Image (cartoon, protein in one colour):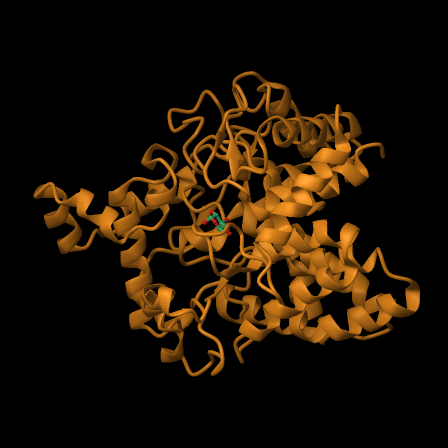
Length: 442
Ligand code: GLC
């Protein structure tokens, strides 16, 4: 590592520039709002440089919490510039939405418990107790909502209703399902009349990032259609499930949820609080639930279509995420590590590719269809460490830092040659580089 001081200062400057007072935007113009899992990763970095700011980052997420417990994936900026963004969602249509904040009506991976614990690690015991006691009610309500609204079969796996809920927005298994799902008549007309490029007029991302690094217009339209349907049901999961078959038990989301449940249990124990019995029962069930996503033929984990009960055998980084859950056997973890070492899957100069390199869907610079991202690297490295694969974890950490040092805090990078892509000065890249810098010698 040539110049860690410079790297640290650059990363701190990115976070400072994106700081909006109580929350940090993911990236200036492209992502001006607050995002759920972004703020969690950001706090994980901020805890090393400004612990109070790290706490404030997480607390500010609670201003968006719905009365039913849901934490939305976005809390919108109130700036008049973004009226259109707020209008797409119109969260006030739901009686559960907060009256003093505009949000979306869907969630994102439940990273809050992890972030609260990571911040807690930096606090003395008494302060940590207060911190956990402060944050626990919101996390409990959130996990209860996930079970109540998103696990109707009580299988231990929770379902997602929009690709955005996975945080891996354009990941191939979800695109595959979306393409097989009912397509609205108006989308077909737009496609047939070659009007798809008109979509660019309302897309902010392609104004800031080359279109080849984002999802294509037709997919963006179909994503909008899912939002429209959710909105028409006022974001009521049960009503939505009655209407639509588009529901997926995502392997990444569920791996993060299972880990979050463990953190929740540990935090409650630390402060001597008893968790609601029904929640404990459901969390116990979830411990083994990831195994429902194992495909013994290909020896991989996949997401599952909630309606048909079938695994979606489309390759993606999701396959590796059960490493982070911490609940799979060492034998299965070994299979996943073999994939990390295999040139057909994830063994590239700049790991970890968001899609295996030999897959037909692989595209090195396109969003979640190939590039390496620092947040998934953090999750995988964390899981590898806990399974004892410390050298693999340290390669991921070292290569992540190399990417940032060489190119700056970009949103994502080509796993083949490290070329930077997506938004510049991206907050979680900066925050997780700070965290990797602190832990690199462990
Ligand atoms: C992109 C990512 C998503 C992230 C958001 C804000 O949409 O796919 O995971 O939360 O940007 O950074």
